[in-house]
Amino acid sequence: MRLRDCYNFHDFRALAKRRLPGPIFDYIDGAADDEITLRRNAASFENCDLLPSVLRGVESVDMSVTIMGQKLALPFYLSPTALQRLFHHRGEHAVANVASKYGTMFGVSSLGTVDLEQLRKQHSGPQVYQFYFHKDRGLNHAMMERAKGAGVEVMMLTVDSITGGNRERDKRTGFSIPFKLNLAGMLQFAIKPMWALNYLSHEKFRLPQLEGHVQMESGAMSISKYFTEMLDPSLDWDDVEKMVKLWSGQFCLKGIMSVADAKRAVDIGCTGIILSNHGGRQLDGSRAAFDQLAEIVDAVGDKIDVIMDGGVQRGTHVLKALSLGAKAVGVGRYYLFPLAAAGQEGVDRAVDLLRIEVERGMKLMGCTSIDQLSRENLRFR
Image (cartoon, rainbow, N blue to C red; front, side, top):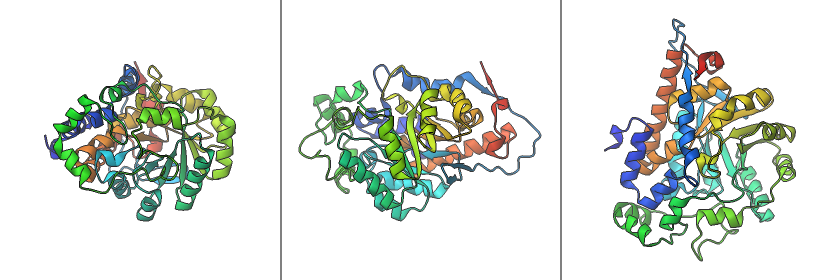
């Protein structure tokens, strides 16, 4: 299989599986416990049907949206994800370049592998910083000040990861950063030597947002251990309210799933919430964001920007979420597999395919702008 033979999420996933060592593929692909929520995220869209209208004159389509003060040319954005240069040496550079090309937003994670300032200088488009709240309050303050100084437009606090999910695929291979693999994991790397050559022949892997605060060089730290030992489970609404005031700008919470929490986010001054179960990687058995979208939009959609992620693999998925009232949709694995398979060229192809699908779907639905999508376009089984 070649990149030009990839036409959808499943094709990109298959190509990435062929090219990546097993432990790294499983880190992207895997989720918590029995991976029920991972599967449910994608399946949730299947219970909802689109109801098209015809003869509406759809020569031109405007796919632009505005979320948290940011104008996007597309109704989906590239969610911040960790460890991108582990999947391909261009990592966040490749993702940011594609986001800029298509006029959408991208994000950098606290566990990102490229300097926040470097990306902000190179790209003028909307940028979000995914923030993890650490036990080290000094680190939290320093990271917020750094993001503000870099000119990041949106602060995104992840609130569903105060402890690590039970990701058994990683446990089986011993996957960690830096690598401290067991025998099974090492064998997987041995049979994919091209990845190792690529990894070793480019810039050294780093976690620049954490340098000077978190020591990972002296020994291996699994991602699960990082979440469990470094992040602060005492984080509460009072802490977040202080962060919102300190940031004094666009501030969203990622990982909101209940109406009560959505209302609380409004009360403390957040400008956006992202319905998310962390791609099924935290609490297995939790509800899919799409299934929870309508009741949260009904409760707070007129007061705060409601966004969702999880399981989005098609343009029709994007349209269904927008029709229910989401202001935009985030994608993660959708671009990570093509990044791993083919770098920037892969991300570009994936984003372009999704753009084409959204545009085609809008025309077939009889809509020329996003605000014409509504629940009248949907029927649930």
